[in-house]
Length: 471
Ligand code: UD1
Ligand code: MG
Image 1 (tube, helix red, strand yellow):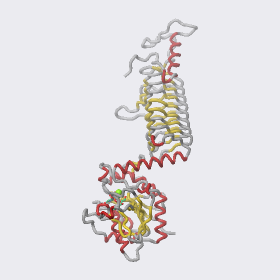
Image 2 (cartoon, helix red, strand yellow):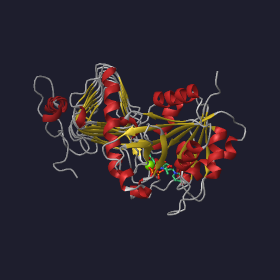
Image 3 (spheres, rainbow, N blue to C red):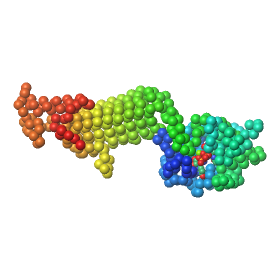
Image 4 (tube, helix red, strand yellow):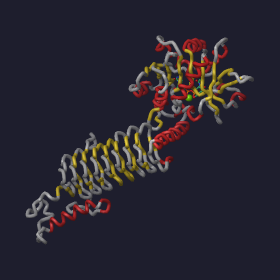
């Protein structure tokens, strides 16, 4: 069996055409930096090691690559073209002999199976170089594959240096290659800098191999939808569309219903259980996990660290961040849930806000099983709401004033409604005992009414002892 292939990813370029300070290979696609998509595809081949050539913004790129197993970064300084980039990786390959897969870091849609097929074809042909080409309608910007009269490859000519006749060629170089290591570096050492811009082109090394006697260079047509290079923001937008199509297709295959796929934005690596419905205009960020038979959206925003247990429902204009939402819990309207753990079977009323940030730090909130948070409640973190506890509509539960299990609190700041014996006037005078009716004080009747109103959710009136206006 052949040696496992070794991969080189080219990621040192500035990406001037992106008009951005962010290194090109870090631009996110479906929430994941472009280069990580490429590394994921390489991870599906038999490559055991990958060398990433970094340069422009290398500090930032190296941070992103830190958690990628088997990836070693080498620095290309200054950046003098794609051929020079591969040469910079040579010292890292000193102890390796075999085939080398070279992939541009700006081809994020390429799939592992396509790379592996390239390696297989290359090995079967015992070639010096095998490269992927694609047939495009608009070849501008790409290197053209120039073929002779018998269809044999003669050279690759870059867009900037192509004659008018060559510019009309629609078969282009995809920037994905497999080389025999010794032939690759022998050829690269013969490449001369381009007369116009002083760059060393990897495509010129291919030309050198084509011209060398006894060296086989193969061009294999690859799948167009995987090989679009990202060179500007318009390419980036096109790539997002294709990546979204893939994300949605993968979820739908696993039993998730997405009635309007073009109107959701779901990042890569989001996990969703079967039977869940994701309604239109929902945004789900990387790392979010949604259980089975949940309902999400329309217009929901599930941010990093959020987890929905089975049967949870998160509806219109609800934003959740670092939120654990228990089984069957509902938060259906106009709510912010930040840094919060909510148990099972809870109801989060419309307009609830978890105030998790005091301007300096973020704090966590806990809402236990079966809790009922009345409409318009503000929970100032850190705070806990106990099992089956309730808050009245408009209540402001202040930090550290935990609500015990089964307790109902109302008002601003929120206070228990059932904690005062009926004979005692309250401190603020509200709810003083009045004429008993049927053995119950009016106060208690009012209390009971307040609790009922709190349960009414969206429609509920202000809590009995809430001030008339709230900030
Ligand atoms: C390159 C190919 C072109 C091909 C196209 C496919 C060359 C000369 N041209 O053009 O034939 O059609 O890809 O997408 O190779 N990079 C470095 N160091 C450098 C320069 C670039 O690491 O000094 C990296 C970039 O970060 C990028 C990759 O190499 O990931 C390709 O560079 P880019 O400038 O995008 O080349 P293209 O113009 O797209
Ligand atoms: Mg490119």
